[in-house]
Length: 211
Image (cartoon, rainbow, N blue to C red; front, top):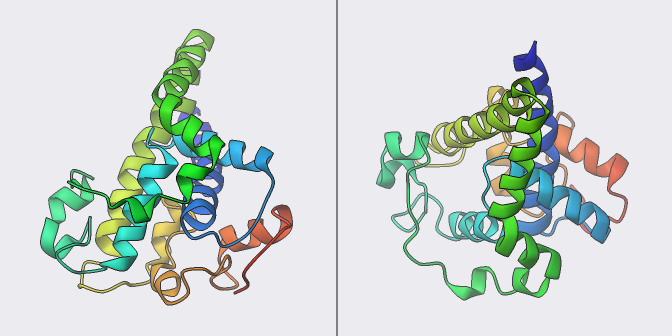
């Protein structure tokens, strides 16, 4: 049963924290919302892997700028399938132009500086609450995020160009419409089946761009 709860929690955290937060909000600035919801997105994104929004957004901006070339941070063609699937690719240098706007947001900077401590404190609290809590709300989200976004980076670009892979929405919620996203990177809603876009429309009111 804890596996079921862990998956449901992961799906919620990855959808709000990664797909809507790290991806469409912080990276592409597809809509506007409140500082309070920024904090929620930053926290949930942190739970899904522990990486800061600055790092995530910078890498993804580089991915769009250099998509499917040797300078693409996680191109399966140039980095290799195994490295991309297991997220063992590395970025030696991130130009400041990819993060300069993010450094102006104090909430993003706070989570970047203190994210590891926040994640550790959260994990300790869950562990003290019970092993099943730790497995469901710390371990499973971490593993599914690692697996899901590794699979996304590989299968959505395995032919040397972006592709839609709808089945990936099961493990990388809102991210399976990868070709649609590359065609409209600033759109908050990619198509009528896009759950992330639906959630943004209903709960994140101050939109900037439309689909």
